[in-house]
Length: 144
Image (cartoon, rainbow, N blue to C red):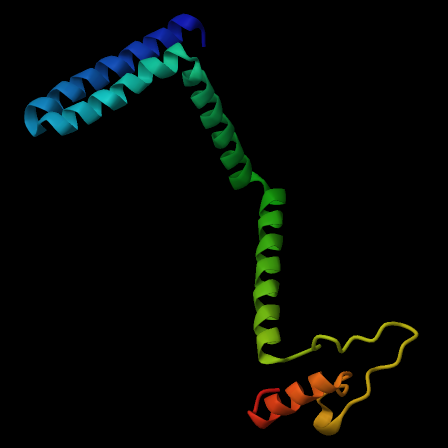
């Protein structure tokens, strides 16, 4: 669009906004009328600062993206893969909360042996005497 078309669009939107402002002022009072006037003044401000063109470019870009999203099987494949990924993340989180599967620290690095299991299979005994006291206290309270 050329400058004359942008000017005509801004003038038309401002005129429609001014008419709506006048009607709101007469029918509903001061506050709605002033609010409509404030919104009406945004159109010539956008025209004077060339942001009216920017807004239409953004709208065109969003419309192009939406059309590409709707009509592209490649995009829908990506959306399906993202959905499967989210489902897997949620399921693994639920399984981890239930204690199903590998537990933290149960993986053995190559070249190392698995940690020795203590009584009742609770893992390696505490290294430090202070930690052993704390561990015994927690076990006596039923916390493991």
